[in-house]
Image 1 (cartoon, helix red, strand yellow):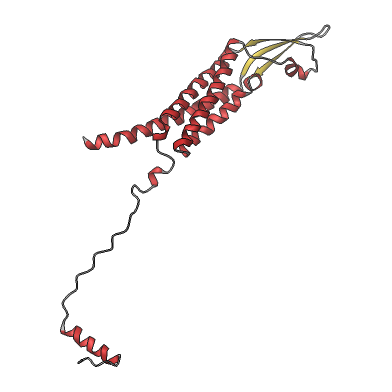
Image 2 (cartoon, rainbow, N blue to C red):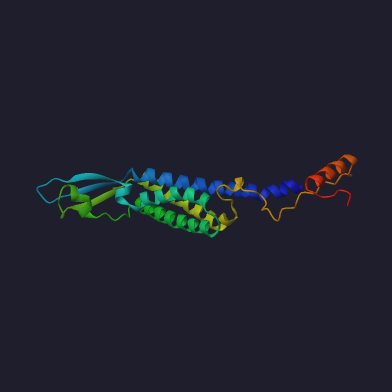
Length: 213
């Protein structure tokens, strides 16, 4: 029973780390997918006698922060693993802020609250006096909103629990630091034999010593 309780916290920490990384990656991927899809059908009413025209704005055009936040969240999925301690808390805060901005952009897209600049929309036709009306494409904006919610959850998880999680390469580190090394025990000396004394006498003669002294 003691082994199960000892192995529990590290296993839980690894699961929480995995969940946070997956949430960051999923949130970033959904944001990038949403940013390349239509967010608004725009109708441009030009001065007579020119007829009205229509354009489709993607998420990156209607809400430029969506793509930027998506890239940041994907990068954060790697950073959460690479850093530890207070650095991981900082990453979690950045994730929460970026995901909050992403969710806010998605919410504005769903509710039709995006601010469209007429000059930007009509730059292709070169008319600055055109009137612009838009109909939101709710589905893709809602996907960005979901991505923002997932990212906020990931950021909060990292901030609250991240300091307890292992870092990159933790499994390859030694579990204990080496202290002062204990010298190897000396081999017990064997009793001196007649052969040893005979060899010692000859060595003494070679050095010029008298072995009988």
